[in-house]
Image 1 (cartoon, helix red, strand yellow):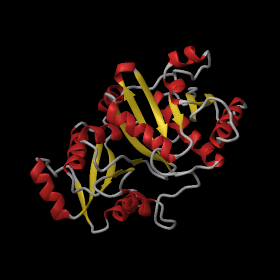
Image 2 (tube, one colour):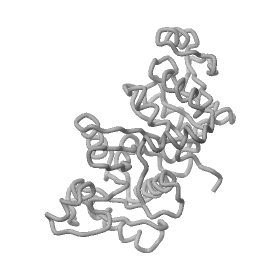
Image 3 (spheres, helix red, strand yellow):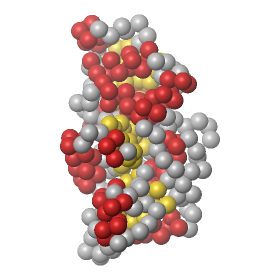
Image 4 (cartoon, helix red, strand yellow):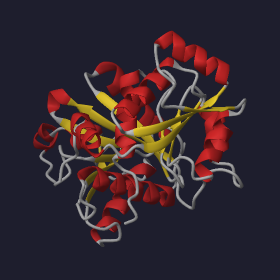
Length: 304
């Protein structure tokens, strides 16, 4: 299987025009309003924003966004208001707007009023590097600091689910690399033992159709020539469609290094929540927010 490019994802949604109600927590930001305005124009979303109404209207005026298609929820607690809209059935997906991550996650993870499930919450980033014609998923880049083996198991299931939904085939067999600094199992590096354990489990079929290999270093997961030079072979080497990193630090450092040094495109979402959450940085551009929306809308549950 292969993952679609962002251009292909956007073309799909342009054709479908699903008009999914999406609520942004913290709407007083030009990139948030511009992205939602463009998505509404293209028929992707019915936009809702939370926050200070006066400030939202001021920012919209400054950046030339028509608020006519928007519903504005005036609130001094934008994260809680956005989560409440999800729980009330007024929106199908939440988008991180002009709000810091801890404030949003407090509302999302609240035991009584949030979007908790029995699954591990993590951030999955879809990355496209046109130069190498590579599109792949990376997790967990932003939430679970040091996942246990059980938590990695759950993150792997989420990674497989997103890869299959992106491919358009829920029976597809994604190629997943369980990442480590070395491809050799070493008791001094427990993450290599976890990687080997997950790869062995995948062979039993417990995760459904997939090819899971590990431990693999980034060069092996990304570039087939690395495998040739190291005289290593495998279906995932040079062809990983998903990369599960051993901890937040390694995943976050890797994805940010790619973002700031490569000609690439990316978008992010959370997994493990009861409703989809479009999730990247407050510093993101309008284009990145649109890509994150496209990624998230393309992986919405469909009742299957």
